Length: 300
Length: 300
Image (cartoon, rainbow over all chains, first blue to last red):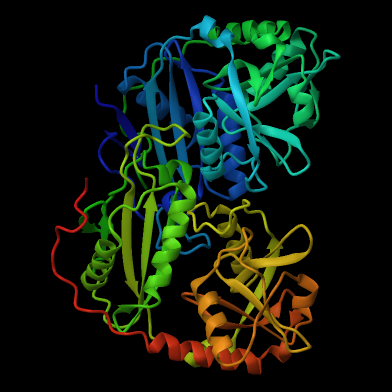
C-alpha cells in the first residue's frame, strides 16, 4: 500500500516530492518534530507530545501551523489514510516555513507542517525483554538538546556508530565523563545501592515523554527516581540499565561497550517498569472517530 | 523572472515543491552545502569550494552525487538558466538522500543534490567600507563546526539576535570567553600591537574560503596573519576588526556590542585587505561556456 503524507494542507502520496527547496527545515534545520506512538489505532500520550511540541515551537519562536484541535484531527486522518488500526507511529514536523535563503527569521511566513505515519508490528514483549547493547560516543550536540529540533546530525552519526558496532543505540558522554542520553532515547541505570537514576531534564537532554511517563509510573508504585547526572563508569558497573523512547518503550540494556550488565539479562526493577509501562501503553483510551473533513489545515 | 532550481537530475521551477518529505536533509539535517559567488557570470574560487565540499562529504561519509566535472557543468547551467550574467550566488546542497526515517545511514541510497542561484547587485565598495555592527552570543553549536552541514539552527538563532539588535552579524563566544566566528562569517581583529589575528581552523570554526583567500593574499603582501583564539575582550579593544564570507567579502566591523572600534571607521589594514580581496574577486577568470546538455546528472 502506498503511504500518504499530510503536507501543508494536502494529503499527498509520500513518494511524491512535496517539500520546497527553500523550506527552512531543509536548508537550516530550522524546525521541530514529534514521534507519537499509535496503539489500537489511537495516539499514546498525545497531550504530552503536543505540550512538548508547544515548548519546542515557543523556544524557537515558531508559530503553531494550525490549532491544536485541528492538528489532532489531521493526525487521526493521517493514521486513517495509512490504515493503522493497531500499532504504528505518527511523525510530525513543523518548520519555520519557506523563504528565500537568509539565516534570520523571515517575516510573515506561515510555518510548514508535515505528518507521516507508518504501521509497526505488535509489541513482542519477549523481544523487548531480551535487551540490547549500547556503545558510547562523545556528545557532540549543540547546547539545546531540550528542544526537539530536526538538527539531528550528531545523533545520526552516533546511531550509525552503534549500528556499525552491532549495537542498538549509542549513549552520549559529555566532556566530564557523564552520560547525557542516547541518540534517540533517554538513559537510565539502577545503581548497586538500588537507586533508579536518570539525568535531570536540563538543556543537555531531551525530556522524553516515555522518560516522563516511566518516572510518573515508578512514583505511583513507590519507586522514586533520582534525577542527577551519572558517569559512564557508574553505568558500566550498574546493577541494571535501560533506555526509554516512544518506539523502544522500556528497553533493558545488557551491555555497555564491553561491560556486561546484570549478566546480560533484564534486571528486576527494569522488568517491573517495563510491565507497568506496557500496561500504560495498552490502556490508552481509544481515539474518537475523526471527522472525515479534508478542509482542516488548508494552507494559508 | 521565475527562478529555476536543479533538483536530483531535473531543472524545475524553484516555486514547485521538489524535495521528498523523507529526504534526510529535511528530517535529520543530514547534509552539507556550499555558497559560491558568481562574478561576471563565473564562479569565484570554485575549486576551493568544491574541495571543501569534498571534505564535508567525506567527514559525513556521504558520496558525491555526481562527478566533480558534472557538478561544475550543472552549476553553470543553473547560473545560465537564472540569467546571472554579472554578480550572484549559487547555493549547492547535498544530503544523504531519501529513505524511510531511521537515524542510522540507509543502505544503497543515492545522495540528493539541489542547486539554486540568484543574482546580487554589483558590489558597492562604499557600502562595504562603511562597516557593520556585530553583537555577541554564546556559541551553542555542535562540536564539528568545521563540517559545512545544514545543521544551522544555532546560527539561525544567533543571526536573528543580531538582526533584532539592529546589527549585521553575531559573533559567537565559547565557554572560555573566546570568539569562535560569526553565524555566517569568520571573525578577524587587528590588535593594538598591529597583529592580524583570526582563530585557527580547528573543529570549532568553519574554514571559510574567503578566510583562506584573505590569509593567502595578506601573506602575498607581506602581512602574516596569526592564527589563534582571541577573547571577546581583545576584540572589544582591538585596533580594527572585520569579518569575511563569500557574500560579505571583507567587511569592517565598527562596533562590537557597545564597544566602538577604530572610531567607527574602517581601519587601514582592513582597507588594504578589502582592496586586495576585491581585486581577487574581480580578476576571477571567466567561465568557459557550458555545454547545453540536460543529460548531466540525471537521477539514478
